[in-house]
Image 1 (tube, rainbow, N blue to C red):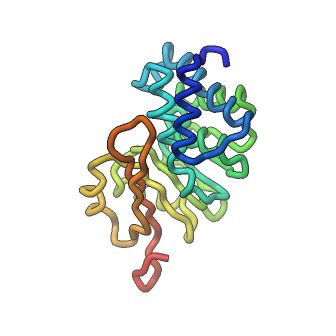
Image 2 (cartoon, rainbow, N blue to C red):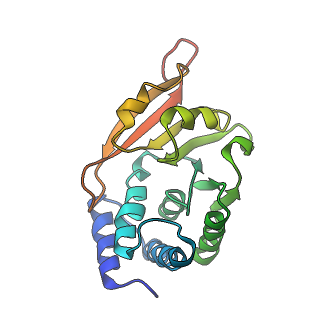
Image 3 (cartoon, rainbow, N blue to C red):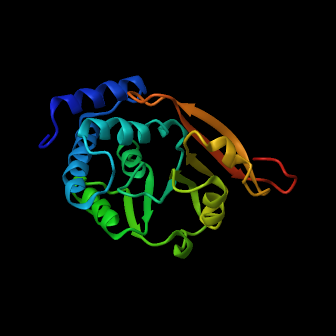
Length: 220
């Protein structure tokens, strides 16, 4: 791929193997092309603090890919998506998934649109809007995901109208997640927590799955 060297390819291949995520040739090519686009645009638009393409593989692509086993869809809203992460990666790896990327930053949404066009993705819709002003699809999304968008409490409060009644939130968090759990509204329950191992990264990536409590206070 243009702009992507063999070190990047090797890191991607090894990382996907460690995550036990098989990809076909088209998916692999799209992931590599996404790295190339990120690196190219980042020099002019400062989309991410990560500069080296090989670091983009681990800290962006593989970090995003690590949550794939917990993404069920069929609809996924990526809130505060930035340059389209994790949504673009998940859309590449699971073509049956309908992904909406939501961000208020114009230059980042322009990158999302360019990436969707150049990668030939038909299952991704970039939207430029503040989350408070965004109108959900009928019935809400099956899953709403965030990659360190805000605190857990703010995340579920700001997106409460965007999640389907039987849907769930997928919160990709950092080490402070335990402190944030205390700030959750009483109407929200922790359905699961997973500490994901991201290849080439130290520590683990906490993923918290949240759902609406039922009328009896239980988590469905």
